[in-house]
Image 1 (cartoon, rainbow, N blue to C red):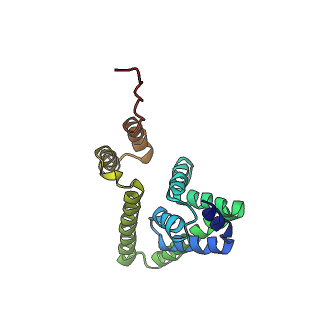
Image 2: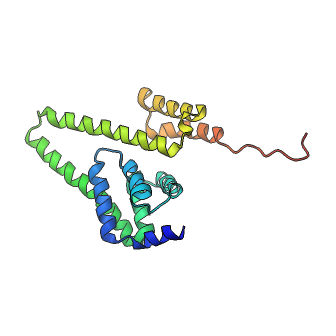
Length: 191
C-alpha cells in the first residue's frame, strides 16, 4: 500500500496528460473505460482494481460520461484539481479533433461510404473492448445465472424493446438489488 501511494505522488502532470491523451486517441468511438482500466490498474498501476471499481461506481452516479468522470477522479487523486483538469482535457482532446476532422471531410464529400464503414468498424471495436472489460471486472461472476439473467434482461430491454437507459435502469436496478441483497444472518439460538 505504501509503495502504491509513492507511485501516485510521483505521477507528473505531463505523464498524466500523455497517458490520458493516448487513451483518448486509442479509444475513439468507445471502449474508453476499458483503456482507462488497463492504464490505471495494469500499465501504470496507479490504482488497485478495487479502487478502479470504486471510481467507476462513483462515476456512474454522477452526471456526464463515465470515462470523463473517471479521468477527473483519477487526476484529482494523482495531482489534485490541476491533475483532474489535465486528465479530462487530455482524454477529450483527440476525440474532439478527430470529430472536427471527420466532420469537415464528410461535409466536403457527403456521399462517401468510406466514412460510414469506418464509423461502423469503430463501433464494433468499441463493443468488443467494453465486453472484454465487463468480463474482467465481473471476475467470473458474469457466468453465474443471476448475473447472466441481469445482463440478458438489460440487453433485451435496450436492444429489442428499445427502452431508454433511464427506463432500463428503473426496471433492472431493483431486480439487481433484490438478487444481491445480503443474506440474513442466522441467529445462534434459532434451531
